[in-house]
Length: 189
Image (cartoon, rainbow, N blue to C red; front, side, top):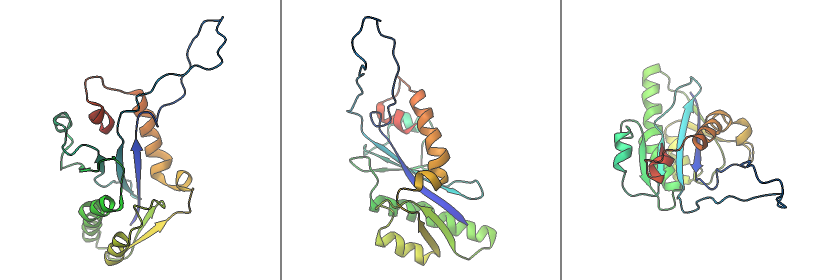
């Protein structure tokens, strides 16, 4: 009963990488700059994995109030993800607590019954201020969950989600773009 929760944001201009281009030999410039679309909004993913290799239903924080139909056609629905609205697309304490109430606490209770385990569950997390609200920590205490915030600045070195899944996901995302999807749907996909 060891879990790791974290969030990862996606924004094209923040996740862009250095590009190498071929230029004329007579060019005096040492560096060229390419434009990046800064009008795209941020999408945030809340994910939670367990030490047994399983995962919980993720939460997608979108800047859209409605779920685009193309996402529904691609299979994104209430059975496999929780999509919530926040104007900026960033996570906040209320949305994190909502995800925990709707997904985390219920799933840990289900697993406790399944494995007949009623001891403490350990929840590894970074020091994001949205994670450490009084409401969330009080609910963790009520549900027998011990939130363990890692030392500041260490999550990219110790959290399984940061070390493996999010890094691979961002690298893969920059390689695959879909021109037939809206920017929001492509970011969520």
